[in-house]
Length: 239
Image (cartoon, rainbow, N blue to C red):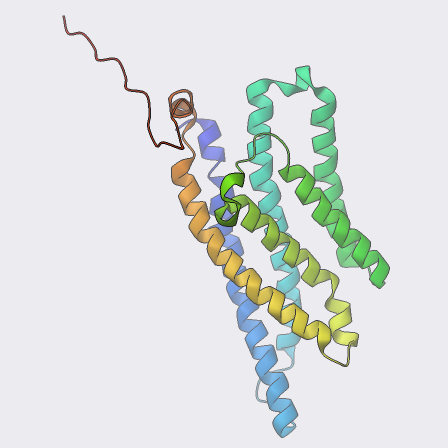
């Protein structure tokens, strides 16, 4: 395994070691928060401590940062590998500069999203963060599997990241909305996100098998993926 292949393992390793445990904590706190609210409405009190709501929000923001971060890491690896392979810093330096600026702007907009309090600015920074992810994902080198978008690690991951960004942007509305409309929207979208994260585990494992090692690429990419056939190597003539 070459260095480029080893670097490709950092994205799934961080997802498994850090992101998925955070998902478990967020779901646990979400369930406790809901149970406390229902028990309080029914009996006027609950044995579940009030701190679970604050912990749910804290871990939810941490999860959003982790999901966006691991998404940028995965995209950055694929794009960086393509830049090195085609030496774009010499043939297309403006494109490389543009990619670097979009990465920086996306991270900055996510930070500003956490700091924003007014609905307008939360909407702006959430939109810019999501747009940054989409623009980065459209760059060359990203393994998108567009012909099977419904089973694509890239498309499922981008959708999950966008849902996380949207969830952060509506937190203030959840607390201020007496009709509970935003809370219901938040719950539904995050239930969908959980299913997407499960899909990420499945498709990520599949892609680790589908994407060849660096030294295998020249031969593997000559295969006909539609017909599932590869060139037959010339038999060695024994002396």
